Amino acid sequence: MEKDKQFKKNFIWNILGTGFNAFNSLFFLITVTRVNGVDNAGIFTIAFSTACLVYVVGIYAGRIYQVTEPDKTITNKEYIVNRIITTILMIVLVAIFCIIKHYTMFKTTIFLLLTIYKSLEAFSDVIFGILQKNEQLDIAGKSLTCKSITSVVLFVLIDIITKNLIITISTLIVMNIIIMIVYDLKNTFKYIEIKQKVNMNNVFKIFKYGFFTFAITFLGMYILNAPKYAIDSYLEENYQTVFGIIVMPATVIGMVAQFLIHPYLNKILALYESKNIKALNKLTLNLVFAIVGFGIISSMLAYFLGTQVLGLVYGIDLSEYKLQLLIIIIAATLYTISIIYSSILTTIRETHSQFIIYIIVSIFALIVSNVCTKIGGINGSVLSYLMIMAMQFLIYVIFVANLKKLN
Image (cartoon, rainbow, N blue to C red; front, top):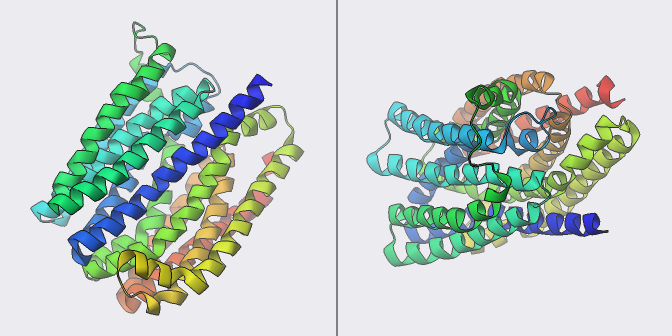
């Protein structure tokens, strides 16, 4: 009874925390578009996307690997040391990227600040992993909820007052550091042996054994953002803003997948280890049907109300992008179904094959997004988004249908 009660608490707070966190970028972009202008919003969009991309470097193997580690030989302290290394690497990689792209000082500063902001989120995630392993996911959800609401309120207020993105993002960084110290670490210390010696072999073992999980996630983020990088190369900043706005609702579908999959990670692993494949497949299908249902509702809302609502919210006329928005939602639904399959396959340690899948789709994404954007402008970017997501969906459906582990 107590276990069921804790599961419900974990589930509810995980939904709230993940949900509020996912909507942050929405409110950030709305504020920047209205306060700082369309061009600055374009810079913010690609900078935030890049920060999210290297965030995958920060979390590396991710919480799925941390929570479901089969041998239980790596200590919580060693996971934390590994995460310190990866978050520093995030910042270094973005700095190098900005130098290579010859960005202005302003654009480079925005890229770096948003990367630091996401690096703090990546560090918090390893703490949340420790809490989740100890059935305290509700604490992580409360932290995410607090950070998310505070971040939005501060971002809007500071940006309206200063009209300065650098000051605004810096404020968010300070706030996140304070909450991490006062709440996250305070609630996690009882699960960490402070005096325990760190085995660096174990720290680097995470890099070794988590490589395929990391590579899959990193390539997955690139696949999602490939059209944005093509726009950065061939189109003006204002088109980056428009694409960022019409692709924003698609993130809600991905957010729903997180709601559904995270609380079931332990159950998925338990079903697989007990060889209850029938129950595992049933759970998988239920998750997929939930996404399909949400995708259908989202598509209808996007077609009949999407551009009007988004135009009203962002203060931009988006009436000519009605069909493009619908295409984005359909594409996002297909992608999210593949992510459900990917998360389950990662939990049962089927990563080598997925690595190959993601390499194939990433190469396809690189070629298609650049060719379509160069030829068709933003319409080409939207078309490439659909083609990329459809390809990943089809490959995953075919792969899972023929995987002996799940048959």
